[in-house]
Length: 372
Image (tube, rainbow, N blue to C red):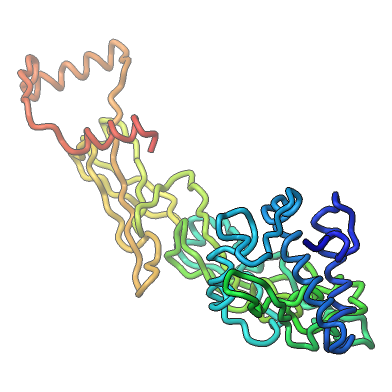
């Protein structure tokens, strides 16, 4: 059994990083395209040693005196080549990579929270928002290289992005293909990375973005700005930028869809006699006409003063819920006047009338229990 530690030139207690570095160094030196056909056997030995020592289970089996890469060595699960390795050998593990991986890739989408007032949701607004995203590096223009330099073709895989190695299985020797460890599959290396972006081709920057918020949006809606998100690695295309709407709570109105609701408290005398009360709406002051005999829980609707419809024209309504206030304490004079009124209305001894519960009773009860 070969001494794989000696083949890679590492100690028996070497870490995975040390094993990987040793393999990359030897693979570059011994690659047949670099060192010639005479180094092919040594190159295969290095690949076989790395195959075993880079896998914790195979390495543990090897340290116990068993060579997992030997023919039939991995049939019983003690390391070495198993059925998964065989499948990956012949079918590529489900991957069909051809050629080097593009260094330039699309950037990620970005999500920004946008807080707006009820009036902005009702009428729409244009906002200039500062966002922190990745932008193309101004020093290297996305090339990832120090100005005046350029990427270099990988001298291990010769720009293919992949390397082939010989592995042993119970079927015999098979040729496997894997991403090149020297260039991470890109086919090129960056000998002199840009100091500004550390070879990423992009940097973080704060910029101002204008977003048009349409009328009718509500909490949870998202506005998409195409190609305004994160620039990809190596100056790749930008992802999309999303603004997620959060509507602030209004001190007067409660929104339900495109309609607005509020409660108007009036004395029982005003409800009985009727009155006109001024209400400050999103459009300015509006008159609420309470007719004589207005009942508790009665709703007065102000048409087309609510939130604009997101899809299509028009607006919702304002629904004013009337709450009649009954005095809890009366002076003797006030009590006497009410008694006189009761006499005039024939209500000295009211019998009362039992009726079915109004849905509004349950609505108020639910609001008190849930706090909404």
